[in-house]
Image 1: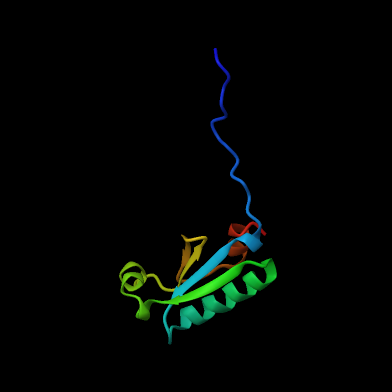
Image 2 (image 1 turned 60 degrees about the horizontal axis):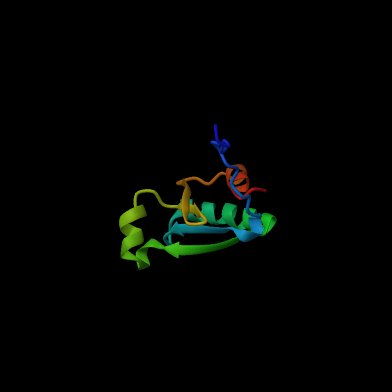
Length: 95
């Protein structure tokens, strides 16, 4: 019998400083305002970078996310929508 390969490989853990959080929302959205506060605070605390995209300025973003805003992506993958939990975001960032 040949050498066995592990079934599960441990993914390399990125430092929070190597991660990017994206907040997708729109102006005048109270949930987006609350999400922005959480994202900004967690990113400041962990050292993660963050950016904000406006669905009203991008047709594709509007088509994909208009029913879910605010939407939070971590490294381009959807993490949360509507309400952002600081502890869950911190955990997703590896902090």
